Image (cartoon, rainbow, N blue to C red; front, side, top):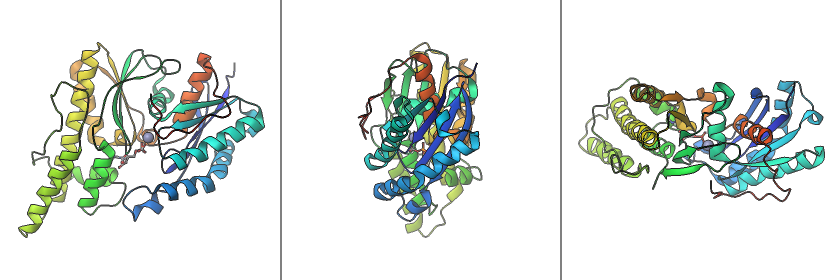
Length: 337
Ligand code: KG4
Ligand code: ZN
């Protein structure tokens, strides 16, 4: 039979995402982005992001409904990212989700942004085995999680970055190399033309924790590039990009495999914007295969922020009989797992 039709709304950063999911199938994934408005500032400006969400919210919901051939009255539940993220940006999505839920008389589900990044993988690869290890790497977070039951149980954090997020490091190094924001895609492309010949530091590698650190790496790249410029020598941009990227993905994949081994888990799922990275995907596949671990990574378009991930987690919660959120659900910039 036909299961519930779940609308998902994501506004935690600079993407207004609206997804529609039914029976584990993605029916629509509409996106509006304010990324171009932030580019000249080299990072996301919270006030600009919130205003852009406000303008894009209703049109993006309407686009998603039209793409799925659905009407508002067809919706059975509304899910929304309640946090973590930019407070003003989150508020726009949460207010919109409450309005739709109240107007349509359907339950509201406030979901955690990181859990949603994991849940989106079920749209491509089916139910997630329990337990699994999740590596979440984006502009705002870098975390290793132990996932028991995505819908019902809280996700356990095994470790996280102690300074910059992995995506943040990509964005800062890209800026240093004169590449546009966001820096992940141009560094990924440049790295493909170079070789990882510069031995940049692997922060917190082999320290026995599942934490990360990328700030020292960023500084090391900056010093290396400055020394070249001071000496009047050309900067081998492709090699710098490849060496930086190798340092990031080496630590990420080593710690993810280490976490799986330490917890006797045989599935790793990778999510977040940096999971779109070609070298991360390749090295993770290589190391997981060598360790007998099943690797699950959604297609790049589902790794970056989107509404599908929120609809996916909302649908899992509906199916698991999780209690809906109250209509005074707060948006929380620091929502804990
Ligand atoms: O998940 P996401 O869309 O938003 C946050 O929740 O932060 O992640 C955005 C981040 C940015 O830092 C961007 O540079 C990075 O993901 N990113 C990449 C790639 N594509 C996006 N990093 C490395 N390689 C990529 N191909
Ligand atoms: Zn994200």
